[in-house]
View (cartoon, rainbow, N blue to C red):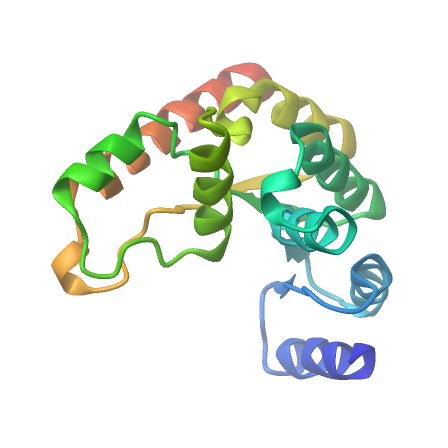
Length: 187
């Protein structure tokens, strides 16, 4: 499996990719990421919630057992390992789900990270931890010089869902978080 991931990195770089993503969800995820970072000649990105959920499934029996601390531990581990950017789905605060439920969607939530966080939030009846603790994300990003890619967890999966209220609200929230990040770190 690791050799296949490294071969993908080589092919992507050879084909002119500007960056690569390590989206591993099996095997030794930490080891794979470290090897991908070593091998890549271009910036490497990850989606830390993937590893956090896999760890929760393997160690606690399911993603509902995932703790906020574990999410941030994985984010910090990946940043410390030297990833260049991480995708974080922090633009969908809790109230957005009432809007999503009331309007309905043809394809619901198609983002894997968005679906993981939504499941966790609905089960625990809690705020999106990446939204609630956005300042903590900014501190990690600044400490390790990691770029935050603000993922759109409610992006549409089909034309019928495009530019619905939930998507637009999430994009507006991401814009607000971007301004907050710049006001704190772009000095």
